[in-house]
Image (cartoon, one colour):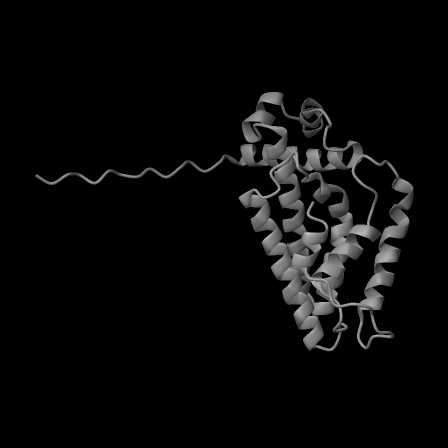
Length: 217
């Protein structure tokens, strides 16, 4: 007697309103983490998002999950901005510039350091988001070099360090007065990346692996 093959039921797709609520929570969390730091009360995030506490916890069972989602979404948006610039212009250096300026707008330098020892910084979602970002930036930098637009003696690690140092203050440091200067300074940095180089840099290009060994957080 043949055994009937069990029918696998597909998991129901999230409703549109549920997806909107999740997006509102992530947006509100990003804003409040930047303003007040990672320990902002979750009920305050729910209030800003316009949802109930139960909705927040249904989407994100704990603070770690919410912080992780915010950081992943920010990294993904910076990658998408670079990809869009490359598609629109075909200019790899323009795509690199878009990535740098979008990183500042997304407050990457404030949010990414939240993944400290209290969080699972090696979570698969975070690792995948980092890998997507690093691979895309490396690809864009390689194309810009091949086009003769980017100096040859800089690596992805150099770029990440500069964006972090030249961008806005850490999370919770309410210093909006520096905002007008951020993109100005980032543009000065980008001009220094253009080929031909005006001077020789000391040392060797910094790789992502070296950056992680030096600054593991």
